[in-house]
Length: 106
Image (tube, rainbow, N blue to C red):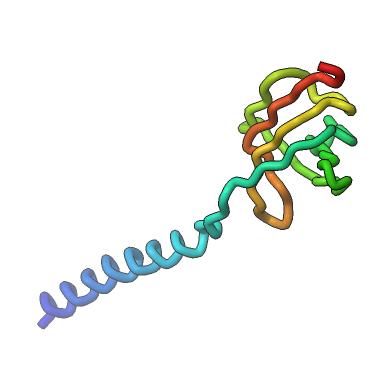
């Protein structure tokens, strides 16, 4: 009797955390989002907050945040430079995956 009870308790202790772990991993995965791109002119650069505003051809300003993981190619982030930006939408923000810079006038 004791042996059966001990085995039942051990089985419950093993199964419960495994079930909980699979539920937690589902909750932590962000919704799949596809990368989008925008092209335009750098209207504003804020190095402290790592944000840029990209004015597209229709005059819409896109607010985009970059991180250490963002690949910046081509040149320096300066107002007036032409850029292409790949970004994903998450946490109510646009997060840059990559930024291609072309100096103004080139």
